[in-house]
Length: 233
Ligand SMILES: Nc1ncnc2c1ncn2[C@@H]1O[C@H](COP(=O)(O)OP(=O)(O)O)[C@@H](O)[C@H]1O
Ligand SMILES: [Mg+2]
Image 1: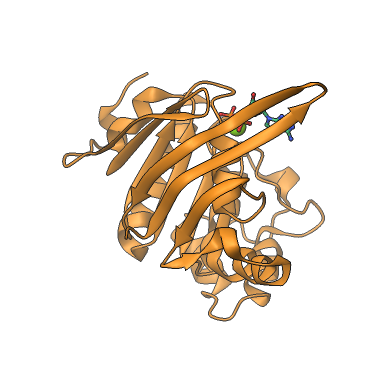
Image 2: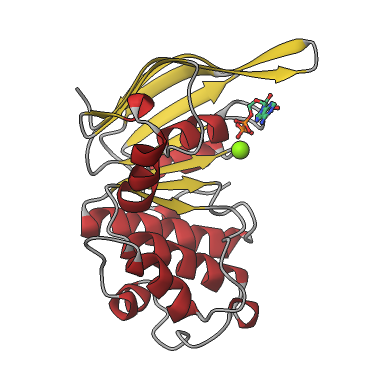
């Protein structure tokens, strides 16, 4: 069994009279330590997939495993633990707490964990040694996303889940954030999943999963990932 494993996972949403199938028998695996990109157009079911893996949404059918544990069978209290200790999240709009400094945002996350990394060292590792005492509003979008990545890494989670992490950033800043995520993957050995509507980003991944209309179109491992500076879009 792979480190992340989806087996026949289905998710339906009701929309008035209609039933939307946001996940239609998803099957795929991701190995430990891989940098995985899940790509597909808007509405393909990417966020649904990531939220189910992160324990923020439940599936209606099938099984989801992380590190041989069946996440889809967890009860509410086990799910709370799982989200707290095992999963780091990075979102498109950073979701930082505005009245806490960069350092305090990271400290807050590390305080609720069993084996946190040092918040200062984590911020230094993402290039923010000089900005620790700034509030989010005093930081650029790229810097705020670095804080969010530091906050996720400080939890020392099993997996990092990133939902359109460059969606709110300009081209060059987005590339720097992807580079940081890729380096974090290699340096920490953490499994990182990035979802994006940008197909080109897949070329930097160890594994590329294409989704469309709630289905997996292809899932391929990529033995020769390109450096992000070699990818143009
Ligand atoms: N809470 C919800 N209620 C109803 N429909 C939803 C909900 N969340 C997502 N959907 C629908 O499920 C499909 C997949 O959405 P989503 O996972 O957000 O796609 P993506 O992240 O790839 O853009 C879309 O058709 C979307 O409208
Ligand atoms: Mg989405």
